[in-house]
Image (tube, rainbow, N blue to C red; front, side, top):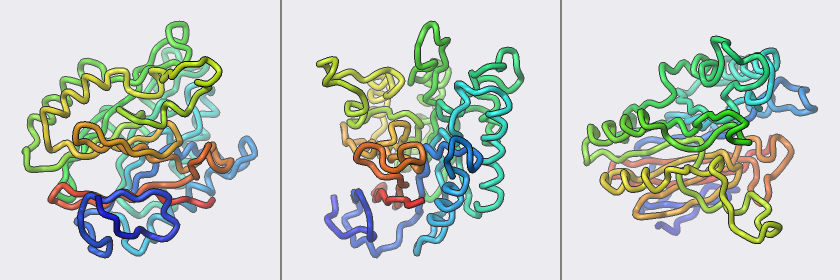
Amino acid sequence: MSAHSSQPNTIFYFDTSNTSNTRAPDFRVVHLTDIHVMPDGAMGMQAQTGLALALEQVQNLPHKPDLILQGGDAIMDALNQDETAVAAQWHAFGQTLEQHLHTPIRHTIGNHDCWTGPGNQNHPKAGKIWAMQAYQLERPYYSFDAGGWHFIVLDSTSLEPENKNPHGYTAKLDETQFQWLEADLQATPSTRPVLILSHIPILAACTFLDGDNEAIRDWIVPGAWMHLDARRVIKLFAQHNNVKLCLSGHIHLQDTVIYNGVTYACNGAVCGSWWNGNYHETPAGYAIVDLWEDASFRIQYLPFDS
């Protein structure tokens, strides 16, 4: 890890490149996760304006990003809202991107992007369909190559009836997606570094601090906060030494965990505490992820002042 200085106002800085941070990366990614947008004025928030400001800020960095990774929960909530409310949120998101986005973007489906609220039964946009249409995805998980790296975007959200799970979902890959992940990693040249993007962390430390563990006198991490199949996924990664970096959001907290040679970075939230300042100790923000073709990388978490 390099000890070189970071950009001004950086909250967190981690560098495996062993070089001065003045060296330009081969490929720059900005990770924007947990935006939770809604029309300005809804619930007294200025979320749509906040997203516009965030996009302008990241796209006017001195070294502009080559790609934006949108990490899920782009809208405030579709889990518990009716069709009219969900439509308004997706319209606000799409309109803001149309007016302010001029950088390639790739999307991740978050739990709050899934419509399970009133009126979804037998609706053609129920579940993840609406989000897939908004993100122009043929399926909720996919992969692509860019900047000398292989990117894998996972679908963390396994929807379940509320009478089975009070959250309405569990973080895990179904068998079809896991088999696809196995095949995708197997087909990727071992010399090409791999970045995994999921909405919910595969592995994180901050998940232990997002509950009232003191009251229950135990450390509990619900299956809606971190992948329940983490052991299985991590064992798969261990078979592929080119898996280097996993990015996530969901918790609205920032941490970085290194386990078995893989770095897991949970990169806060653009909305912070749902457009009401910091969430616990983590300010609203975004991550700059600089990549080099030699598999090294640099992560910086910067505050976003909306």
